[in-house]
Amino acid sequence: MKIGGNTVLITGGATGIGLAMAEEFVKGGSEVIICGRTEETLKQAKARLPSLHIKKCDVAKETECEALYEWAVANFKNLNVLVNNAGIQRMIDFRKGTQDLLRHRATDGEDEIEVNLKAPIYITALFVPHLMNQKEAAVINVSSGLAFFPMAPMPVYCATKAAVHTFCLTLRQQLEGTSVKVFELIPPMVDTNLDKGARKARGQTYFGLTTAEFIIPAMKAFENDEYEIRVQDPKLAAMREGHPGGSPLEQKKW
Image (cartoon, rainbow, N blue to C red):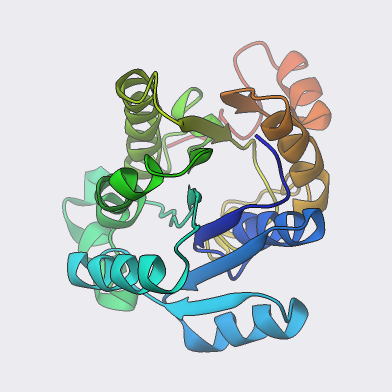
């Protein structure tokens, strides 16, 4: 997949990995649209990258996804790359029954299954017919290394990302022979605000790759048409090697 000459839509593109990807696509010569729940963060992203197009959208709501689709294809007829990046991560202890599930929903109104799994599936269903009409197109789904090496403190997050991985496999098979390539971007731990401070609360002292360290090899892998992109973190790999039963992070006692 070429990095330049595209029209790219990135969900959750105002911060973290999404914003880093937006910046690299802009540098490569692509037109980039980002969407997110919060107007202020979208404006901050645009202040950093003035060429961005921004659109407020809560991807957990089907009606807002539909409005995003209608707006995007009406205003950007050459849109050819969809990046499903929006995601949330929560610590949930099932020994407390529904307490953690309900507490997080009451605090910010966000649900991991809605945001991490249902949203990319529904948005992909909306956009694929449009993408198939483009000469070259791509769907990029951001999963996680935790889909393959789950951690007990984030059971729902890990499950949703494992489902995203399976969705990528089946979607790639369905779209074989079309103009649409399906990529799965599998980040290791990256230092973003994904967990809203939960890493510190767990007593972690290492927070993963910076977005800059992560995004450069990721973009090279897109250019090389690597459909499952696993960016390695040498420091975390070394930590795992020193702990045969898993990294110190994975050995968190419950």
